[in-house]
Amino acid sequence: MGSIEITIHNATVSDIEEVAGLFDAYRVFYGKTSDMIMSKKFISDRIVSDESTILLARISDKCAGFIQLYPFFSSVNTSRLLVLNDLYVDPNHRRKGVATELMESAVLVARETKCKGLILETTDDNTSAQSLYVKLGWVEDSGVKHYFLNV
Image (cartoon, rainbow, N blue to C red; front, side, top):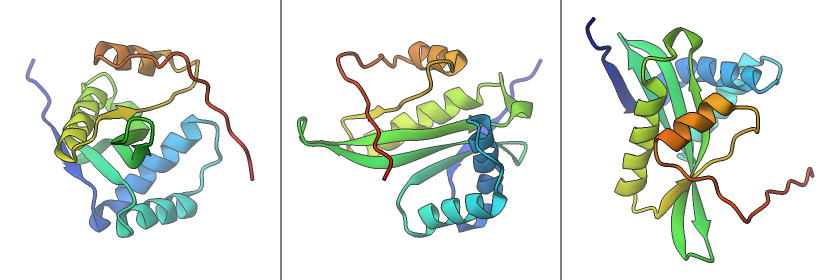
């Protein structure tokens, strides 16, 4: 059995349509209604305004998954961090190492941009993602609580 070649690259304007399809599926996974127009606009805005880094994984030139990173700053630690906000692998490409490759590529981006680290959050019931994070050396942050205010 041969190994599958996964390629990772920074998404550009020419990738917007494909990333938007994955992004829409990602949102549906988290219970949102499919909306390709909104997904395409959101991804396009992030790429065009350089507000995030989107890494796109391909297998045999087909989009397999993506990860989206946002810059973040810690005042207490006086350092730059990256928020790993979105990670999604197309169901047809799961269990092939795509998520691991994307996560490892995110670490490289953090190092290249002189970040102290990466942070992420996931839902309590997303145990498959949690086990991947632990396997890759991520540690659950204790002693803090996240709050949200809808405005």
